[in-house]
Image (cartoon, rainbow, N blue to C red; front, side, top):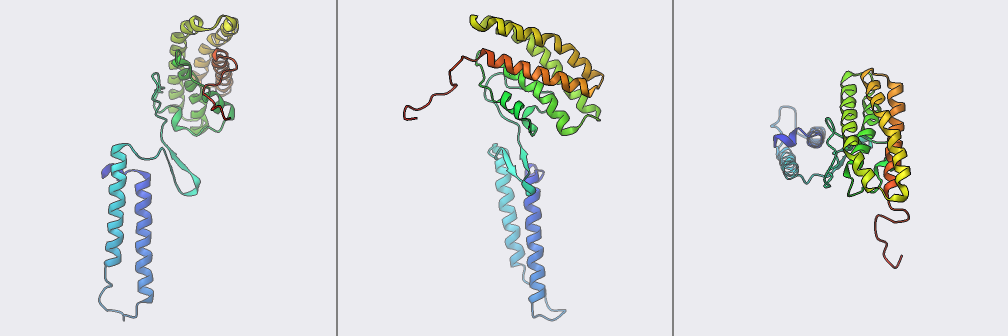
Length: 241
């Protein structure tokens, strides 16, 4: 129950029920023919609301404990509390604190890159893509005037370099012969960009950081696209279509 009470949804429900209770009591006071000083109104309405609140919070607590709460809960004003994506595939991203799933991504090109079909034999490619996209999402959401966001982005960049170093030999080994020259050229573009990117983050140079981030994000996306089989859909289409 304590976990549920700490959630924004539980607080919202409690506030709404409290408002309902106050409205019921005020309305009753305005319409009651009882004279001033008469005995207090029956508490049946209050008891009913309190019971409803208890049932809702019990249900909410069970959902939190069992992990069956929805991934996005709609709040007033059209906002949504977005839970981190839970990737079941091996090699899921574990960023320095939260990862790409906790940020609202409004960049169409970034969304398309993150939606590319994952190559089962090279899961670290998708991990690298998520790490580089997370850097920009941090600055988009938090801004660039606070030290913690620079430290978190620098951690992402360090993880990106290690991931790239690990996956590069496998990429060259598994790249089809017909696209190997293209893949090699992209890898040769990415490698010299990693150290300047980390240096820009250490110096808190937002212009250089965003420029290098955009270039690395495009190059990693191009690398994934180059390795996908041409003219092959990542799913099957029913014959009737």
